[in-house]
Length: 147
Image (cartoon, rainbow, N blue to C red; front, side, top):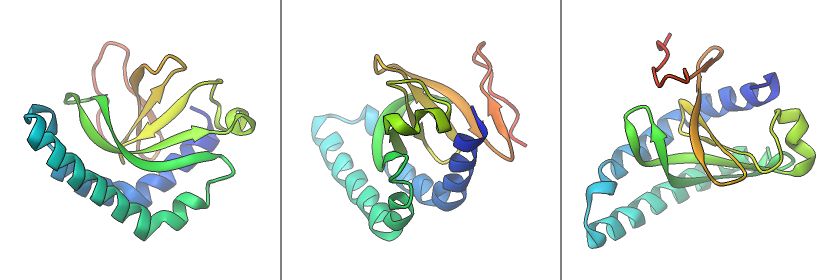
């Protein structure tokens, strides 16, 4: 992770960690619900994410030069296992790839603490913990110690 992308994610953590955590608490367990329950929970999560974009969308809009940055839910391989979480999703413009240290087709999803990398095939991987410095998640699947 290069310094530019880390600075962006560190700023987003400062601004969005609580809002994403709040949305995440309301959708916790969505993956275990039946179809009707999942539909209702999805509507709730969409309303919460619209609230984030309404209240703090000006921050997301400030990064439009880098690419599309929006709030959404996504099934990701979290430290607690694969589940649906609230994230900020960055789809960078081709012209911004170099300054973000990303390759063509890569996208970044951020849940307020952990960054996930989506490759050009659509595969997600838990990538970094965003703290005072980026902490790589070990390849062996062990989580870093939160400082």
